[in-house]
Image (cartoon, rainbow, N blue to C red):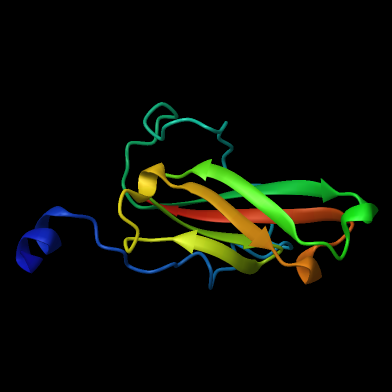
Length: 126
């Protein structure tokens, strides 16, 4: 079975974007393409299996500083690692059966929440 899996299924080669700083708020993403979400990769013209990174800047009001937040991303096909201001706040991998159906809801710790610009980054492995 292990040989069949190795030959026929995508193998996770690790999160290569994290050491490149893709989750860090200061990373310049001006040359990244944009994609309207939610939609299937195939609908967006991405005919691939592998890893893709998404980032979104969000404005947080001062009244929310020092309070934990709930980050709700919906279902992600297949696996994810999710960051808030460069810190991992959640993720679901191959250990989760039917991971593509699992709604992602992660708690952002209060100490990560700051007023103004904040960055959500998601590494999506499919």
